Length: 101
Image 1 (spheres, rainbow, N blue to C red):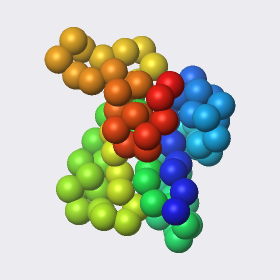
Image 2 (image 1 turned 60 degrees about the vertical axis):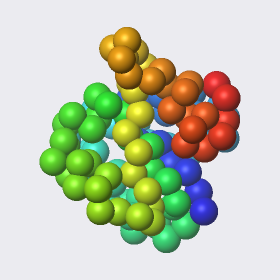
Image 3 (image 1 turned 180 degrees about the vertical axis):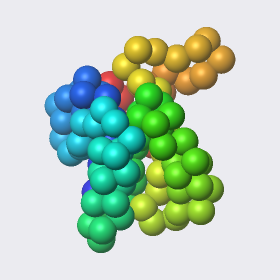
Image 4 (image 1 turned 30 degrees about the vertical axis):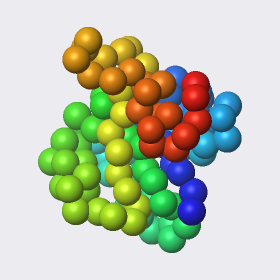
């Protein structure tokens, strides 16, 4: 099973350095298209979606996080950072796929 990241171009670039493929998106239409493609690929096990992109398609991402088991959809912080009460991107990635950034 593969891990895929959908989101901010900087996040996609960073994950590509760790060997995780992804798709950079900037609009709701691009986000929906990327999610559709990820679900069509039967070898995707985890889809990481950055918060900025998740906000573009909030209802769909929330539904997928609650109801999708394969692939598992996980919302991760955007490269801009997170509020102090949320985990950092490195912490989320470490918990999600076991890679320390």
